[in-house]
Amino acid sequence: MPWQPFQGANLKMGGPAAKMRRVQTLRGSPEDDADSLLHKALHLKTMEMVEFLLLKYREKEPVTKAEMLSSVIKELQDHFPEIFSNAAEFMQVVFGIDVKEVDHSTHIYLLVTTLGLTYDGMVSDGHRYPNTGLLVTVLRVIAVHDDCAPEEKVWDALNILGVHDGKEHWLYGEPRELLTKVWVQKQYLVYHQVPNSYPARYEFLWGLRAHAETTISKALEFMFSGNDRDPRSLPSLPEGPECNEDHYA
Image 1: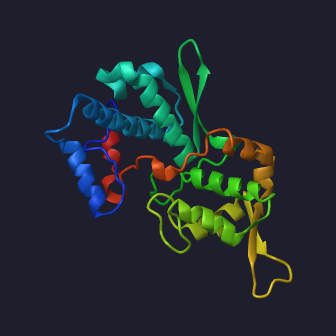
Image 2 (image 1 turned 30 degrees about the vertical axis):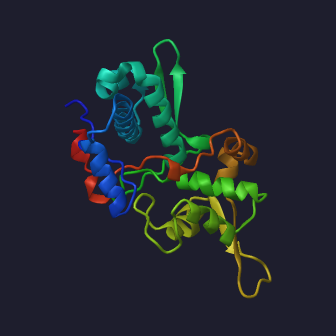
């Protein structure tokens, strides 16, 4: 069965006021003019595109421009460049996934992890979204601190993004578990006590696997090449039980 876009799409920005704004956005209002209606339509199409690209990523399939036009863009084909660009940026910043064109003549794209990491960020506990974006962020923070970042500096950076120690995150899950256990076991991170520190202080370093798959210079280049947009400025995907695989059947 062909892919069906997420119905009543998304724009979750958190909190009752934001949810009310979402309802108002979808309903429209008498004072809406053509420009604002177009902006809303492009916004929704961007998030539909993100959902479509995530499906392709999970299934490890390439995607073509023709597929995107027929399955997602449809009547807004003149706006494909803007929609595609915004969706690709979202994929990179939030999920740590690059959308790379591998055939310029037929416009075929592959979905690969940012920085060349082999970790796909998918987990087996029913979590639907990859968490690679958070790993990339942590690696970048460590890189800025010369591959040795105090734990508090890492959490300070993540707090800005709404990721807090000891608090379950709707997209990434339990962040401390990821930072101090999962990614340590996968050798992307090293987490240890600072020698001779009292009271005990801890720090993060790049692990062997991170050094084998990418470089500090690439992480810094990525950070300062215009790809450092604050994820809070991007629209959000639907949270929790609203995410249903049946929408993709």
